[in-house]
Image (cartoon, rainbow, N blue to C red; front, side):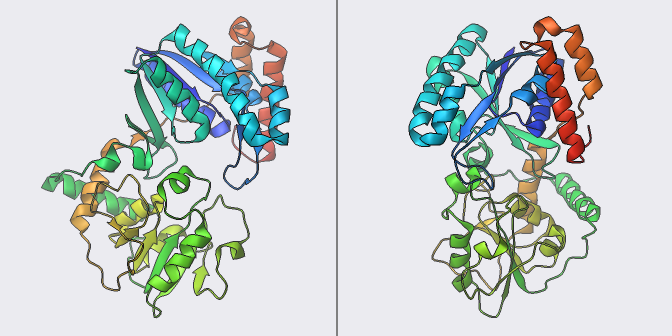
Length: 396
């Protein structure tokens, strides 16, 4: 089978992920083409809330070009990059035409039988997806996203999309057998033991995991555009005698005070270990964070105001915007275990083993005619990545 793996923005972590997927598919006998982009223009991302360009050229040279897989890289356009900073939204239209020309050539020449995309929800991936569907209405897709238990080193695959756009989110989990339920119960014990949090109790507070406002889970599947809006909604809907503890997303680098309405009774706690905050809570309330799924492992009542992979299940209680957070909870541990079983069956491990700089350089020298870049620039890119990892104390 001819498989095209499209990744517009291969940073160090994502490059390792798509190469792991490529290795897995190659071992199954499939032909692989990696389609990447040297540069992507974004209006915002994670904690960066202004238009900016992400240059992936060194990563592509160091990791993708030396991987041994066939690849196509859309070149940087420095003229459009400069215009983007001056007039972001207008320039995105020209950038779209520039990228589409390369997408079309890659699709016409390779004729993929399946396209694999990580996530697929951001706007900069939509151009490619729409074009591929227009060129081949029967095009088969697989959308990948990080798994849940844990997120690192795992993934799930879905034919429709990820998160609230996935097939999982529209499907009610099936009844599971006694043996399957016992397996889930044992797995929950082992998972909690790993985090040293099998001592479950109720310390009487509502725990609220906050999320990144630029994440597609918020921009597409949340009734609240900001965490401040969410917390303003929460406070009057929690009994005044019940404490509220919120936790900032670890990638959100803004000042903690930006989250809180004036005179808020919400306490922010970024110091207590996450699993301890879950295990000692009365209940958990969130939008659609993965933390809500982890909470099921602790057999706590879970409420959500957004949509996610859990939307087709009764394991997590969907709360209307006019409702109060209950003080007495009615929830089913059995339904929670059915959803957990479904997710565990969907989740797969990802072999993120990476090659050393030495092996990358050796591969580059042996296959210099296949690199698509001058050998000297590939060697320099590897040295830059190595130096950056050393500076950030990352393993090679």
